[in-house]
Length: 119
Image (spheres, one colour):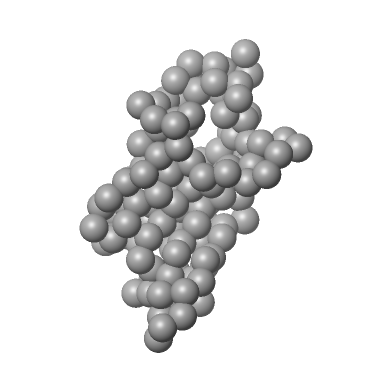
C-alpha cells in the first residue's frame, strides 16, 4: 500500500501563487507515476497534471503555462507549483500515485487539500 499526505493549500487572491506538496510512504517502489487532480465545488474530479518516473509531464489545457508539477524521488514527494491563480482554480486538490506491483495496477489518493482563489 501507499499512503499520500498533501499540504500547502490555502486561500490566495487571484494572480497569486501556492505550492502544494505530496509526501508518499509505504510501498513507494511500486509507484510508476504521480499526479494532481482537483474537484471544484459541484463538479467531478479532473486531471491537473501528472509526472512519470522518467520525468515526463502532462498538463490539462486549463493550467498549462501556469502550473508546474515536479517530483523529488529522494524525498518520495511530488509538488505542484501554481502561479497566476484564477478563481476557477478553486477546488479540493488531490495527490495521486499510480502503482504497479506483481502485475496489478492500483491508484492511491491523498485526503485532499483545499485551494481557494478569490477575485
